[in-house]
Length: 109
Image (tube, rainbow, N blue to C red):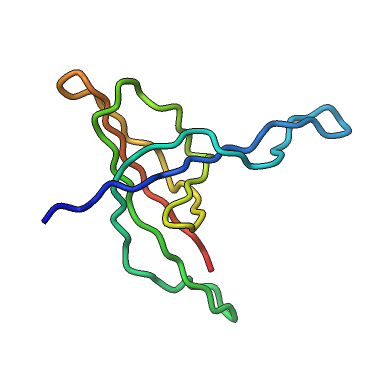
């Protein structure tokens, strides 16, 4: 039995300018919608004294794309209704004439 593909919504902050004329992140909006697979990782606890936080995340895999998607490490990804920060660089490669990407995501609760 193979895993099913599911929607991966990549979100990006719009760029706004503050009162000093410096660019700052604005509202988040949908940027790219992909169909891929999500492999969740085991939750772990952060090592901050006095805080009870849990870090969850996983890895997103997408393949058979006509073009390399515009995804950056500063974007976010919504998967199964949960918004995650992209954790690290985006892996992208061209194989047999189509693009594939993978990236890690994490959420701190």
